[in-house]
Length: 317
Image (cartoon, rainbow, N blue to C red; front, side, top):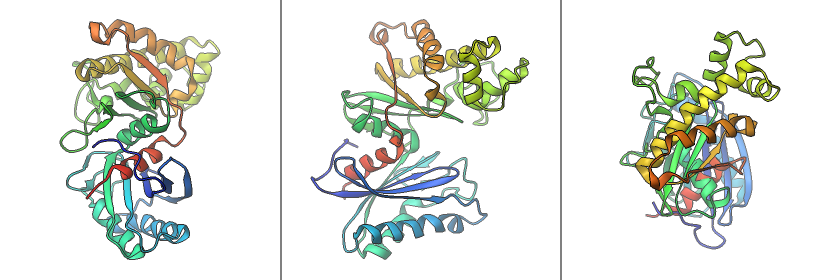
């Protein structure tokens, strides 16, 4: 998919599906959000019951924006695994949606209100983050980049030569589940020693607590203590960023990309995360073509939602 800014003046619908809330927005072709709402992610046993708030939110947003009678383009970002060609999602954090036909359900909800069959695109949330930062954020000066989210998990997506690199099913560049320790413990994905097992926020907190840290129960407290000089917090974050650096270097070496943009809640800690990460990258990015690998902090607060808009702007018939 080639990244496009769409037709001048065109507005699209963007949907960002999260484990606790779903964001819906009308976004213009210059990235301006003109209408936005959030609905709860209901964890119901039934998939359609879980979808109900999203369907209602789409109807309200379309009516509020006066888009009835318009053929709308819609972009959906969701945690994976997904199947972009098949139009379904099985997000690990929404149990009712297993191979759930999200594209068909969204198309039906939009058509019911607008009266016109929409064009709908689907991408992983990490891919949407990359699209958003490439379009309007820290990667807007780049033709190729990898966007990453460091939070309760480690997500990623790549834009290569101004095209989203989704792979065959839309699950490419799952950086968090690259193994950096083939002899490590089993990950929830079934692999061993994955990046996410060491670098995600909760994993670093658990590792610190196992070493005697008692400063809190979340990554914000851990990074704050590291900033204040707590030796356990510093050491655990260093270990986590070493694992992340190994995953970044492996991804850079495979894709021949030298620019990474890191966002997500944990990344907001700033230097306490970026300094050890950049230090360790120098140990792993050793091939000549990735020796100048650069990791930038993300700039957008809503990169996933804007990335879903960028996806929508690129959807064609």
